[in-house]
Image (cartoon, rainbow, N blue to C red; front, side, top):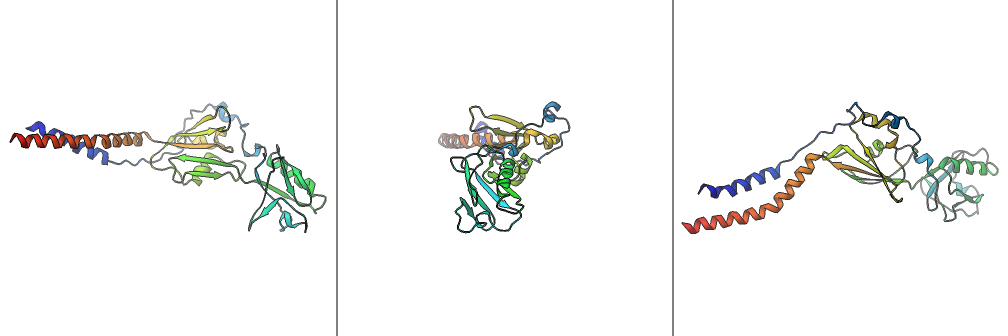
Length: 260
């Protein structure tokens, strides 16, 4: 009757294996040798947020650094397209590519970079205002972070050069299940063929890799490490096999009792 104990041994072994957990230490920036060709690293003409061209429906934050008043308050009784809050004043780019600014009317900004729009608006305000210093920001540019990070979600690009390191830091860093060598940036999601950019965070050269500078609508995905994938596969297998083993064990037990 020794063979009757075999299913129980199998069942116990699977239960033990399925209950095992593993915690992996992240190894960031320690790999000295780069798999990225130096010619690629030397290339600095990749587009970033400073190259972004303003489009209709974009939200612009516009203010005069020389005056504490909001743009829409500079001219009483003049209608503006802006909206004010406690800290910022924003203007939505209309479908015709213009923003309605107090004292200027509709100003065409579609197709301009942030700096070009800033310089254009500043020049236009030099007539009605004294030595204006205009600041323009684009408030709706974002990236999406998914996978093994502590706080997945959408993150606003608040500066011209935001790297994947900045965004992962804002997302709380990697989880213990993450594979720091398998991070991907998916770029051009609105185009016909999105580009997949592999990033190896264990390689310290990623800090200066121009591909790691994020663009609007990029999707950052952090994959699971191999140990977690295997563990999940084993757990899925034991979830399926456990009821079968229980039934087999019960049948063997019934048969052994019946033979007695």
